[in-house]
Length: 405
Ligand SMILES: Cc1cc2nc3c(=O)[nH]c(=O)nc-3n(C[C@H](O)[C@H](O)[C@H](O)COP(=O)(O)OP(=O)(O)OC[C@H]3O[C@@H](n4cnc5c(N)ncnc54)[C@H](O)[C@@H]3O)c2cc1C
Ligand code: SF4
Ligand code: SF4
Ligand code: SF4
Image (cartoon, rainbow, N blue to C red; front, side, top):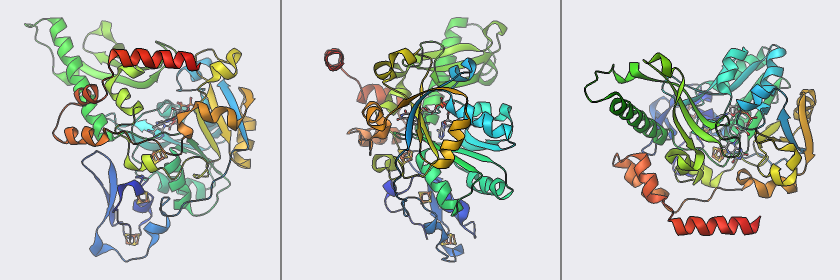
């Protein structure tokens, strides 16, 4: 039976939880805010299935991509509302048109992230856009297997480890499954996100109160400040390369409907800074065993960072996607898409995207971060303190970057 003795060896895919015939594995959240499986030993019949379907205990062979493409969705609105080139929504539209089902990551009512499925465009739209925290898999593999057995087309998207977990869970090839992962440098802690979001709402709420004047009686927080959307990768305000973290809100004041409540350039936002500095990723991300062809996804999608240097005429700062075609099935689907495409090469793109790195480097202050997090300290304060870069060092870095270019 599954026993987590080393947290680096569990990516939280919940394949074991969903496969257990006795339903005696549940997930618990650890002090860092990540989910891990735990077996109720008295109910276990020692069948060993949980170990057989674990992608980290049973690594697959690496497959190298057949082709590498730069891609832009021709539907401008679809591209603008996607993180990169809008490849996911193009694939989803194709699957929906064939009567299929799409699996992807959505926010739940508390703005935490889970994998869900939908058979309609309306249900698929909330899956668009990167949500930079670990998604709960819940029963997504069980649901996907049900649809696959019914002969429905299934598009399943997720992190490489979620796709590796899906393949292990299914334990056989389904011709009607299209699995798509993305280049992944790691997932931040949902627990850290939860605290950061609370801090953000409190700050926004205090700012509102101050703006309205001390003596004004305002409705309670929930009524006054309901969040309409959170985007980790908004392109509409500063473009694709300088993407922004944006919170939009509905409020009791009609004039403010869907107004921008918070808009930070990515490196200026404390949560994004912590994520991009890799200070609160899941332990398994620092020793990832599922990336770079191990997940056996049909396609891998990503940002085509560096397109401005490789193919400047293809870059309009509205987002260019990178597509790695890994299998014949992936090739057939890619050929069906109507997209603007340019052929690239593996050797050209690897040095330009941190997602290809075999392992994300452990941040030297990760331990300090979680020690302070455990005391209840605010995320923004810890990040500001631990990741503060003095002005002189920022200037030196800029000069170095400029010279390198
Ligand atoms: C945690 C994370 C790390 C990433 N790291 C890199 C990287 O290092 N380099 C790089 O080039 N690209 C990375 N990406 C991928 C990139 O951000 C885009 O998602 C990708 O380029 C697809 O963009 P798109 O425009 O085609 O579609 P989009 O509309 O942006 O598609 C979003 C897709 O991502 C899925 N998704 C979103 N959030 C999550 C989540 N939390 N868990 C699982 N699935 C999710 C959705 O279900 C959907 O399939 C990362 C994404 C995430 C979520
Ligand atoms: S060994 Fe079988 S019964 Fe026991 S936890 Fe694993 S899957 Fe469940
Ligand atoms: S990696 Fe997935 S299958 Fe393996 S122990 Fe962790 S949650 Fe279970
Ligand atoms: S870095 Fe690896 S372990 Fe971490 S979320 Fe991505 S695929 Fe999973």
